[in-house]
Structure formats: C-alpha cells, structure tokens
Length: 267
Image (cartoon, rainbow, N blue to C red; front, side, top):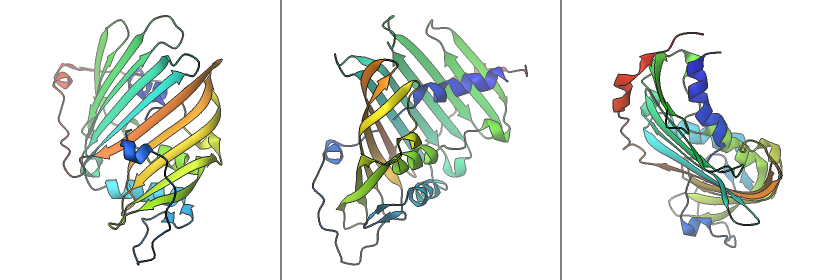
C-alpha cells in the first residue's frame, strides 16, 4: 500500500459528503399536472419517475466534454441538542475531458466531544502527475507528488456513482417541469437505503427526503439529500447538498504549493 494513495484517499473516505440548492428548490411542493405540450423529459426521467442508471449516465456524459465545478457540503447534526457533529466541504474543479483537475476537501468534527479537529486535503493532477497537500489536526503539512497511473486518478469526478445510489435509494416523482425542458424530481419514500453512500459509522436510515434539479440534457445541477440516522449511539440529522456550477467557464489552475512537493517513493 502506498503512503501517497492513503494521503489522497483520506479526504474521500472520511467524507460521505454533500451540494446546495436554493430555498425554492428545497421546499416541498405539491406536484403539478405533467404538461402534454410536446416537451421531452431529460434522459433517464419519465412521467413516472426516474431510471437511476440512465439518469446517472446522462449526467456524467453531459459533463464529460466540458469543464465544470462541483461542490458538495454535508452537515451531521445531533438531533437532541442540535450540535454540529461533523461538517465537510469538498470542491472539485474539472477541465474538459478530465484532462486535469483540482480538489479541495475540508472537514471539521467534534464527533467524540473531545474538541474540534480539522482535516484539510488539497490535490491536483494534470493526468501525468498527482500532487497532494495534507494538513493534519496539529497543523503539520505533508506535500507529495508522484507519476500518475490509471488507478491513481480520480475516476468519478462527476459524482456519477454516488448520484446513482441516491436515485436508487428512493422512489421519485416529477414535481415541476419547466418550459426549457428542465425538471425537478423528489423522493421521499425509501426503496433501497443500502445504495446510499453515508458517513462512517452511520446506520438505521429513515425519514429520507431527496430533491434534484435536472437539466434538459440530464445534468443534475443541484440536489439536496436529508435523512435521520444513528451515528455510533447518537441520533443525528444529516443534510447533504451538491451543486454543479460554471459549466464551460471553469478554469483549473495549478496551485502554487505544487512547486514545493517532493517525490513520493514506493513503500
């Protein structure tokens, strides 16, 4: 096992993280009659709901040849006293055809009431090298880079797998359909909670609510997921939000810290 892979992976394993929707999108609305004026549904969406694999595939396909920014935020809050147990933010800037990308992951946690701890991971790749900056809770920084192999590049930059899990976890209905072909879908009835990617040590999911804004081409540009669960022995409320922004307008810059990275060796 390589140290360099562990440094990059820690950001993704700890998270189970989330993105934003507007207040209007987050509100529950009464479904309106589906229009019959000839407007087509986005790929993977039908009058009866969604086809998880088809919609997730359309989402990833629409992003494959453009640049974009994807941001997820997740808050885990204790139900009894409303205390924030864990809060994470993960942002990725992705170039067209995933030729290069940059990511930033931040986690603040007080899960075991031993004081707040912070984890910060930054990473960048141009397809040839991967560079990481890891800062632990004591403020100690590790800078590494290595020659990229196929299994060391992030392969789910568009969040396709997690999205498909959220789609498969609930039964969906179309609650709004716009003249431009965009739709809003909502799921409140659990179908397969095991498909959800959840934070570590979370179990007993209930009261799930998911709301997604799907563009005419199948891009899920905003989604909001909430549910109750048990984290260790504590009852918690989890809110995870995701948003795709700056499609066709994202610039993936090389961070200044990359110049100070040292070459990682194989262990």
